[in-house]
Length: 246
Image (cartoon, rainbow, N blue to C red; front, top):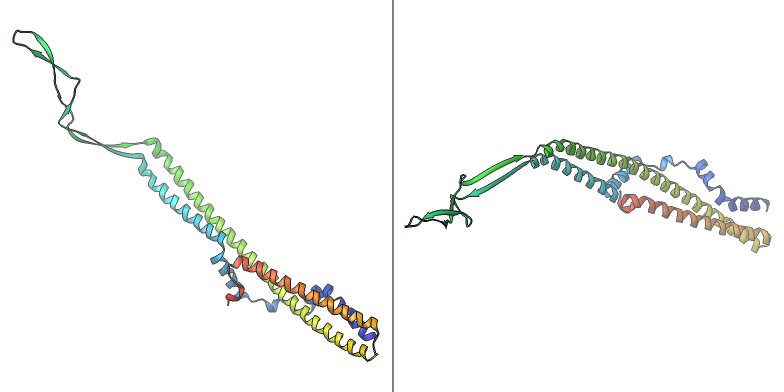
């Protein structure tokens, strides 16, 4: 009876000792796959929305650099004016002489222009031209900032994927441990129940075995929930179900 009582007490405290037992009895190193982890990181880089937004920022910055370089042409302005051979002018009065020698005025509708035909002009704005190097430099700096931002976020994203993958592996190992402890508690319960029904064990020992099994099953349920949450956290970065990544 003493041996069974001791075993029940050990099982009852399994949920509290699980983290220590996990580190002492099982190594997570053997459960970690570096090639698979690399696949997870590449999947996150391909699917994570914020990373796509940073890629779009680089595209916009590159477009702005090209646009700034072409803006040098803005300093040049091309224009033209068409001037016919004669122009119609209602305000010009030409002097006239009558037969009696009296001088008067008369309207004339035609005026000869000094410049005839189409006139072309090319104008250069020096102030606008001098501002262009600064605009190009600013656009290049914005492109450099966008590149630095995406490189920084790639490092951050890779680190986050690693952390959540390691946590997921830890939760898997913890669930295995709790599942085995539940099986052990159930076996003890069956043994105690059998002996209790034969009158070889007390009611108190039987109740302790039942309590230990209940507590262990609760610990197993908690471990399952922790595993599901760790899986969801990892898939949040991946943008895909973990089962789909082989």
